[in-house]
Length: 119
Length: 108
Image (cartoon, rainbow over all chains, first blue to last red; front, side, top):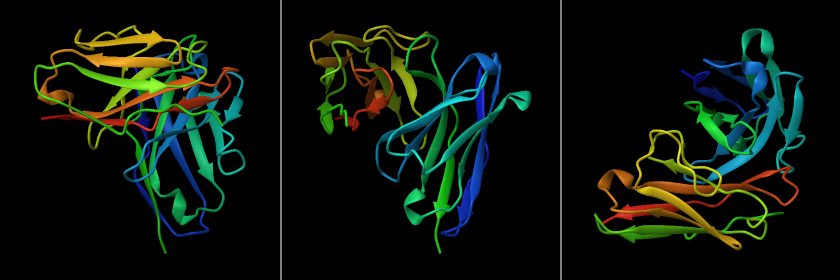
């Protein structure tokens, strides 16, 4: 069974750094792209970027380029999303997603990680 | 930047047919996908490649495409179908993913 299991909720202060994780299991982790999707409170879905764990090829949405860093450690089948300096506007639910085979869609979703940034 | 446009809300009575549209200039060239999100849950893929249904998704969910508009149709709507629905596609270059703004389906 394919599973994406994300790290737990975080509460941070503005200016702090953060790295959240997404562990894949039940499939070949290095053979599928893993992406991240943001959902701000009460709002819609926003694609942030995606990484191919096999070779670490990474693409970012223009809206998130330079704002976050996506990485992966294939030895432990885990993808990461990190911030170097959080802002209150980063408060949101973050989902990791697996890209479907051959097409640009997301067939499996993690349970989500809620990030709250507040002073 | 490329956008996909959905109606903010659609309301139907149980047993009726709900149709949710999604418009975008690149849709004639790029497949569309649909996700269902219930409150407090992660989204679930309900339609891929315009009209294909993943295993486990009820047959009452179907998708179609015509020009710059794709449509998610839910036949014989049930109370459990009340949710937010998002279309998703890629820009004309196929480089960047785009989500529609979402449509809240209310079952009266």
